[in-house]
Image (cartoon, rainbow, N blue to C red; front, side, top):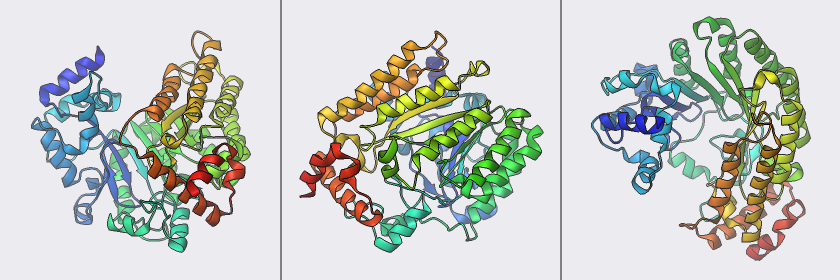
Length: 457
């Protein structure tokens, strides 16, 4: 009923009206790209606009033209994800869900009555300062990992049909990242805007690259420590792979303890990633030390009872065989660090999202009996949820279970997916991956040996 009311009020302005276009932004400062909502592709921020107006990190002329379309009752083509949902089902699209969020809905009247030409301070901000990273995850790329840049500059793109991570393609799209040692005008503009932006924020999230390897991350955190009275209700989130040197983990935890113990933020969430266990996790997230990852998880849960950890799992073809084991591990940590103070939020969350790109690592390339393992993982999470107390304080929530089930539904769904083509790309990618990194796929993933050998030939 709530979401229907939100939709009705949005539609009273226009059938394409969405508050996220004003209230939300993700800024990739390393590449100079921006977008509001994760569905539209990022677009380049013109430096000329930025020189005159630092808020052009969000308020680009391109984005303002899309706002104009929305206020005039049109549907911007870049938002076709939501139009496909609304035109082909009775479900609510993310246009409704995002607009109903507290960081958006409170400004409904202000945005509805605004001019499309106005600059707007967003309430929900995600920022990546650079692509500096110490890992080379199999599904990542140069825009988000400096380690990937080093590899591709040395060896070139991968021999797949799409020339995976070919730097020429990235340059053609004007997405080559600044080096952290270079002057970056986008980061400079952020710091001009930050004191004003901070006061209006509902949610602020630092992404990467690996944020703990960026001096700007700690500069932001220290600013919040010193100026928290300007915004004590901030929801703060930090991404980290938890694979950096101990001194950086120590530095983060010290600041986090101050922010949470002294109520300088409303909440603090640490986002991290893993989507398999043991050697299979280390193969996929190249550079990760799996056991050390869990040591750092435990440090946070033990020393910072007011901090929540969210594990973002990019479920892919290399996840399926040990995801059930990952669920076991997460559940044991949930039980161990259940705290009555956390009745309103879990200490440790598992957020499962299926990987769609690169297609050669999609779960759609798997055999049918291998896809069934995803459903088994969902059943296991459901079993742990049923064992839990009525308040579901340390099991798996229905949302977490449904996201795993949704992954299975995606794996078996029909659609425009050329299985033979992407399996061939998979074999080409793995062969080159092992050659460049000194890994051994068949030893690490014996379950996929037959598929790999068949398509390698």
